Image 1: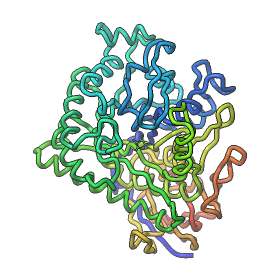
Image 2 (image 1 turned 45 degrees about the vertical axis):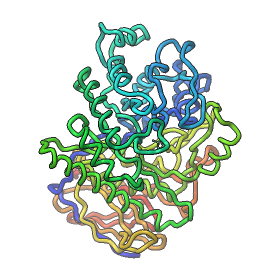
Image 3 (image 1 turned 135 degrees about the vertical axis):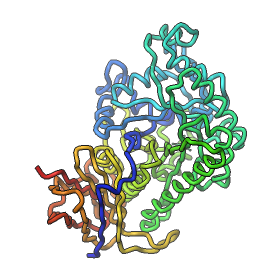
Image 4 (image 1 turned 90 degrees about the horizontal axis):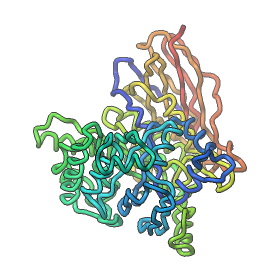
Length: 504
Ligand code: AHR
């Protein structure tokens, strides 16, 4: 057993947590839409073809916003293909994922599905193969009340009232050479500014996300943000960040340290935004939209085989990572990192939501189940609301492949509006439990509600349709709270959620 301690103070607040920190992402990719959220004829499908078993799992994790329709897919997408009578919608080749898109599920269906899933749309426009004109028409179609060509067409297509899409992404990963219509930073900054300007002329209430680098590993990272924001800073409301991690060599200590990289990435982007703000003498502070994050590597080899066999197939089972226990721990540290940066990270999207690198899996015609990563997301989304607290942490540390001085304890804490305090903590140690002491004196009288634990003896343990609860939360007894000092045991390799409420 090793010792670790934290100090929390109700006045040391990092910022209000935007509920959209618990967003996710559905792309027209693999079985995310077809066989995921939409499967007419499935025993659990409703009259719209929406799988209610999947909706139930999504509602339980309370996802306030879902990014759609891509992703790389959006850079070759004509939004007009996805509206109007389904029988008349064209089938198109999707060059991003070498599949065929039938457009059976489109803009109206997605907005309707969002209502059923208790979420809201974050809609990406195509700034790859298309541009300003298609972007302004999409906003007019979705949000203008009526009396114009596109808004009247929407009414004719069944939605008299505006679809009310309030959050828009200006393209996707436009720095990536793999992207259809890939651009230089200046080219992208100009088109994002011009598209954004006309979109806001039609509906000034919308918010816009500009594409930051597709990863902190891109050679252009940093310069891209600086150059493109120089063009579009005044028009946009957020800059995006994307990052995926993997552990192909089975290096658990190194893998579990990746939040160190994430923290650096976030701080660098904040610095660049603020440098552009200073340069422009602007009063506006730009916030961050971390709209793609996850573990992604398990399915890479399998996907290459699928594409060899079935290029241009429909709804191919690609990017179907099966997540293990250590992936759930990493996701816990990522969520903690977002909470520690909640003052500036206002939107984050777990990429993605169903089947495609997702916390929820389905079988076509069969069941739906929660992967290991579902659980930390559920806990953070349910209990990580209100304000984020500054966690003063003292922990033993270790050195690993890419980082020195990695704390064994990774912690975040929140204060909810009802006065409840929640501590989220990962113990990264492979061998040692941590005896945690938390100084909570400033909160007055609190009572422990529960200590939720996610632990498995095997870092490679997974959940399957046959064994969906193999990695799932349990209750840990034994926490004590005495005169504002909490003591709790954090088992080696564990995700912990310690919930405290005001004493009655
Ligand atoms: O989420 C999968 C893909 O990862 C997205 O389409 C793309 O934006 C990113 O590269």
